[in-house]
Length: 301
Image (cartoon, rainbow, N blue to C red; front, side, top):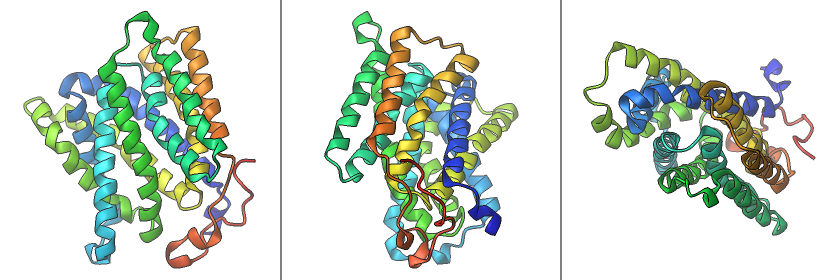
């Protein structure tokens, strides 16, 4: 385990961001076949199976106090996935990510303890306006709404992922919450995908599940066990830019100059919202134990 302590927590988060956005971009083809909710349900279901096989979660480890956080994280994850993929049906990937990012950015600003930090979500909102270019009269309000709802889910996900990560070893928490997320998505996903599922669809969904949720969620939980909410939210500020780049490379979604300025504003606001770093030692591990890597320097600033 000593080798793991030398890996900076921000590296887990960066790898997770690339995996999330790559998985999102590659999901567009499956969305065309089984719909956004159907894609979310299939991806999460495959992810749940993989997590259960890998982690083999022990239900006996669940305490009564864990039930609400586990259910909350699972439902938030499921709804976040459904709403974000629904947004991708209507608006470009980079724009959807930027709008969704308002959720974790607000978490970072509120939990920073600084009133000055509260201005940054408003600055990021200006960037989002530039991204959506409402003055052109082509804004898809439903797509924007779906992305905003996904942002609420993302903010909730960050808060509860750290709590669950502190309670359960490794990816045990994910093996308990992703099945809940799959069930939440199934409410709208099963009716949408039913009749369109075949062996090829299942195989594609399995591959996408590795990219999202399995790999990034596991990496994010590792990162959040050793970082503050605010440091994590700050680092994730580059995710809209990653989404824009992959949207350009994979989906041929070319942004305008104004939209590039909007992305730059969102990323800058996210980076400026909080320049804090690592979690306190006493909060970094389960039951007050010292977390791995506490000897590393601060992440930012």
